[in-house]
Image 1 (cartoon, rainbow, N blue to C red):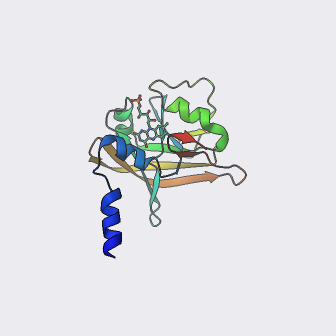
Image 2: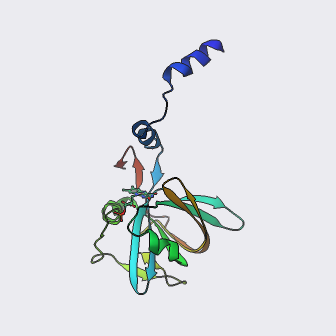
Length: 165
Ligand SMILES: Cc1cc2nc3c(=O)[nH]c(=O)nc-3n(C[C@H](O)[C@H](O)[C@H](O)COP(=O)(O)O)c2cc1C
């Protein structure tokens, strides 16, 4: 027991930005693109902080940097779509991580709540924004899920150690 305690003391390092980012990179996630339409303009951001929050009611969350160029539009939004990318959609993840994504080749459909739904995803959710929580340099968005679609034939895009799999 004492030996184990000593060993952990030897390997643990105080947090800094570099080792914090690197350690979080060891957590494999899926990749989503969160979209909204405001006055006929579509906004989309690549997000891997997406997670389930509650079953009853069905709630999900994600967080966005308060420095993001689209943050004001996300804060103003009522309905959003969360598009879970398939293995074939790495290019979409790269595109929507840009400040000015290219919308030309993106095939959007519109859902029951008129949110922009990306074609060919492994899953799509339409959500109503319920609440936001500001913590550190990010804002947590808490959303009620209103409609869903999923495709059992596709495989998910994964993100691990800053690489796609
Ligand atoms: C795989 C991946 C996952 C990402 N996940 C998040 C996330 O969960 N939250 C976030 O704020 N930014 C995330 N980003 C970064 C954003 O997509 C975007 O680059 C950042 O918000 C800056 O946007 P801006 O240039 O429009 O300000 C992720 C980027 C990648 C490539």
